[in-house]
Image (cartoon, rainbow, N blue to C red; front, side, top):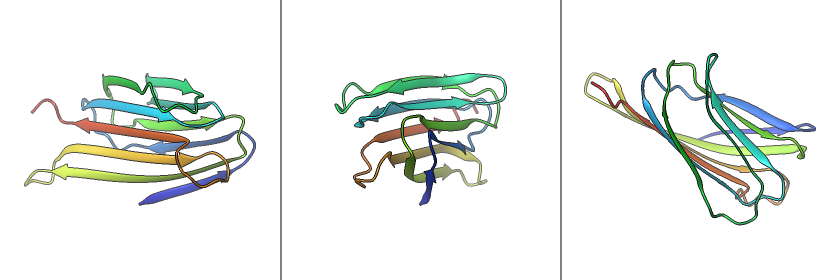
Length: 132
């Protein structure tokens, strides 16, 4: 498990995703937070996903699909009204016999204050090699 904690006014963090070029991606995101939380997935040329949500209700979930056009996609989490961002992230890879990545799933939960329930942000990113 990877984890990080940011303590600063306007807590923000960028994480490289390690998704290969031309992989198909699905994103599902929700929040249960008093603060607005923004998530952007982009590379140096394109923004694929840019959503903000402020709600203590888990539904509706935000979803998006796209193909990444480079292998440098990154996710930025931004909580401008928070002074603390504490996240836990797991990555699951499925590879073939030649160790080529077939699928990568990234699951993250985050806490934007100090009640440690880790339900303020939940995001799942799944990418797979859709073309041989």
